[in-house]
Image (cartoon, rainbow, N blue to C red; front, side, top):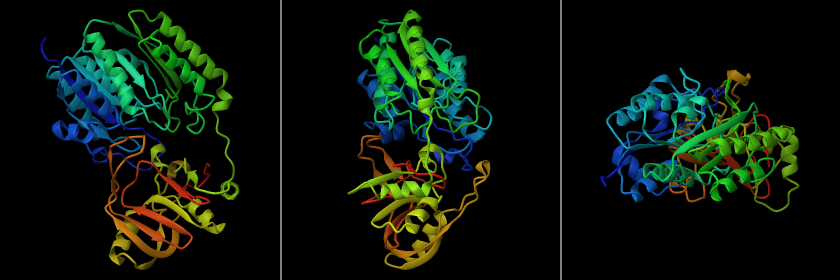
Length: 439
């Protein structure tokens, strides 16, 4: 049998339309060809999972683009068009299948359905091409995505520790289809719900047994694939929803019934998917009561994984006001402060306004720097390889990064944003948002 040719590509962004941070092509750090394969091979990412399936199948692999940007504002039109054309062009050049690592919540300047539009374009040049799509748990499902994909799978976890496996699930089903073993058809359902990212993790209720039901159907073999998507509420677009997608063999009836059961259960619990916060000062005070550390406060609002600017200083200011000690906070994205620290050098004492450089007009929040005095204890290149369970093996590049020790609080300040903004300490922690923190 002739060696199959598979286009494997990544074009991922979770768009917070309220974020003031633009998303140009440079934010995606796009790679292609051998460089992309070398960067993502054997990593716990969708691209790593797709590459593993394709390599195991002995396929000829073409990677026209591998680009992923941290959540932020609208994707610039030129960035979207550059990456989309690379993928469409590779398909136009001929292939037996496409494995596409997408997010499902991309909003560009000129389209509010970034993934659906990409799939429509791919399908237009290759009407019968088998297409496997991996999506984030926070995807917004649309009919255009469903109509133009052959197989769709989504993450089952949040934090997302199954990114590679999600892609592998889609890739394996598509290879079975190429071998004539199955004939995938997709069923789906959605409900008009903006489920909070602080409440909808599949590891606990109200989402847990909804996801468990989908998992059981897939692992038990009654359907080919089954996925539930919590959606991403930080986007002002019409198709925000909670949804389910089931891939069946030849007949969609059973899959459609499963989708409806999953979504009916989610809808019946809609009140439980709302997050009810508490005042910032009381949450910081509560953290002090939690006993021996470490205690971690994760700043949901200013987290770059939710599209925040990662430079809001309200929580750190409250931590200092309440006199907490043994705290590490950050990283704070502040290129200006990093430049001043680099000029001062390691061991220097500096006083400077940290963070608060970016206004957020969409939510009427002006930037508010916090003046800190401290000693520079460390300056690094800001690069490291992830060894934890999420995105394992990937390389993070934050640019020059420094540690400023104020006595009670050590603040990590970076030139570029990290993928997640968290702060931890023993016994108490502070993070980086004006509004609330969660512990």
